[in-house]
Length: 287
Image 1 (cartoon, rainbow, N blue to C red):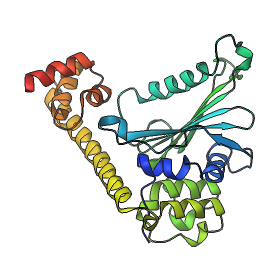
Image 2 (cartoon, one colour; image 1 turned 180 degrees about the vertical axis):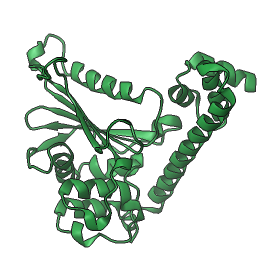
Image 3 (cartoon, rainbow, N blue to C red; image 1 turned 90 degrees about the vertical axis):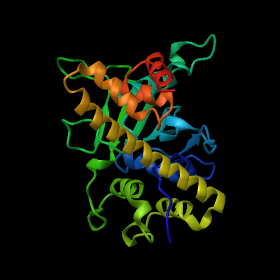
Image 4 (cartoon, rainbow, N blue to C red; image 1 turned 60 degrees about the vertical axis):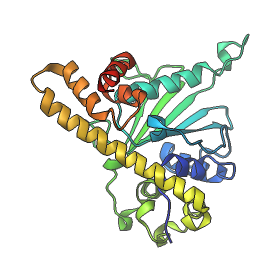
């Protein structure tokens, strides 16, 4: 038995965002947001469609959106590539989702809370050892929570989760282990098969249940992600070495030049922080 990688866009959405995934998503969100407590009883998956074939950097992240019974909106995103200003993008998406709730003529009282749950395949917060971080609006001096604290950011940094299979205790542990390690498993672990929603997630992730076309597409997506991760890491390493004495801007340009044959212009701009105009100028010079 082999399982697809839940960290790829197609697999993540197939497991958590398809029409038959409601119970799976409820269990997953209760585990990661509410410490396993059955806080969420029902939800509606807003965009239950599998992702199209997309070229470029857009293939490295995917979001699933759900509306809870009380109207709270939840954005679930899996991000595999550490790109420039990613934290700002998370905040932007949460704020945009919050603001775009209102239709013409509706008052602010109609706004519902937004929770942005972001899983990353890289470390975001160097000063924190916990693999889960939660951010809300607070008063600076005494830490009191803002009365209308409607936007919450929840991050799960997969590399910081280091528990092995025998060490899994909570349902939170088991869901994170599933996301991080399902691809390397050959069967459903005994200490995870007592959770029906996890069992169902493994069934959906079972390669035997996919068509040859789906498997081929998944393999291409996974190779694409690995190539991007390697290219960005190499570009940054070589760029730092060559641009060490030439300042940050020049370093960014050197990194961008290393990526011209691997990523599209938007991807290079997002990775390096350069403007699209500068990236296009570099590409024209290369051509």
